[in-house]
Image 1 (cartoon, rainbow, N blue to C red):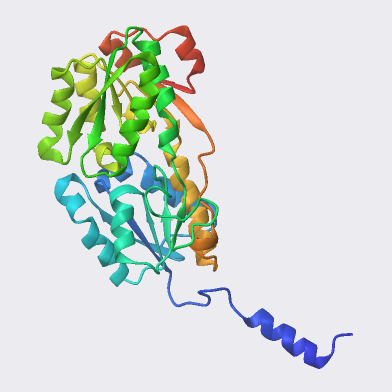
Image 2 (cartoon, rainbow, N blue to C red):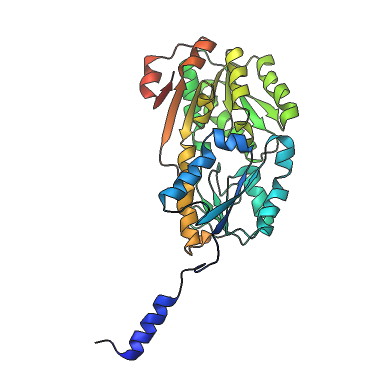
Length: 328
């Protein structure tokens, strides 16, 4: 039989709310995205995050509101620090963003508000975590670990261009990780004697010149390095590559879906859905410092048959057999 004293202690313990509860009004979730709002919607990344929240029982408007801030173009990218500060001043409970320029902008704006990264090349190298298992700060989330995909990118390009000798990399001049990624591409290409060149882009005004340089230097293939900035230009990159008979590849399936030849890498939409799990844990009291960064759960090869026909590349039986999805 429970004593009155123990009953009072137990009742008091049950009355202690989880961190942040009870509260007035819905949770405020900041969403900072490097590219345009249209790009976030067309690629399905923003809807994927909302799907993840709904799957956990959250209803937008009743349980949470999104304060979205979107870049787009060089001017939008330059405003990322300002937009991050706007979210901090708005007293959001958590911020959802990607790595790269958006992650750096948020890191500069706050060291206290929890931040969930949806995608980063490497959270330790980029300075968002002390380690994958114990991030240690206010950042946690999902890594793309795109440094690991380049041997496969070279392998896939060799399957469609058997005499491959020159590969171009589309590089964002303002992304400090791209110098690291470019070295990884060079290391992956070296055993096959393939030369790697870079085409630098830092905004809309240099985009045409940057990709035009690829054709002038007679590259046979194009690797698009991971950066949200490039996502908004996927249709133009795909059209350029197909028109100039360049075999092209990116890490996410959004590229072949926009008309590009192929992609190999993690499912980025799944990352955005899974980001909701992190947000849920944080809203219930978990600390980002204690939530390990997750690895991608699977890598996919996606091919676009229409792009292959436009380039004049036959898709081999081996490549088709290895593909997870073939877009007609």
